Length: 135
Ligand SMILES: [Zn+2]
Image (cartoon, rainbow, N blue to C red):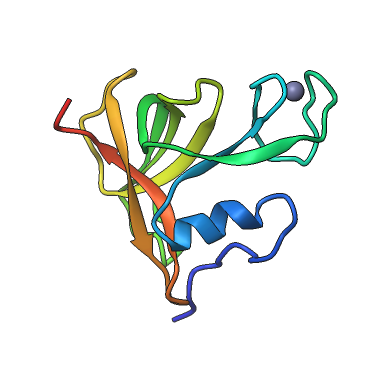
């Protein structure tokens, strides 16, 4: 069976995000001049036009924005049912990340979520999301 497709390491715009995930850290891009969060990550701030941007550490807490439960399997590496979630970071409103959860879950809009790091075949990790029951 084939391995899951992994993100390309070293990409100039997204590479640092996946390198941080390999260290089990969640990061997001923001402008150092005006504070605007930048997603998808780019070198230049779309609000003020500045090039002074950097990666910020996130606490890994978020709110569930939306989700979809997939009941019909479309690929053997993703057995059904599974749930695709979209969360918005608590410490960086405007940054929304997509994640994968095994199985179907009892979810509701706005519920507290927290990051978990799913190990990958190359020894790294991908950020995924789970309900934060410590809410
Ligand atoms: Zn800016």
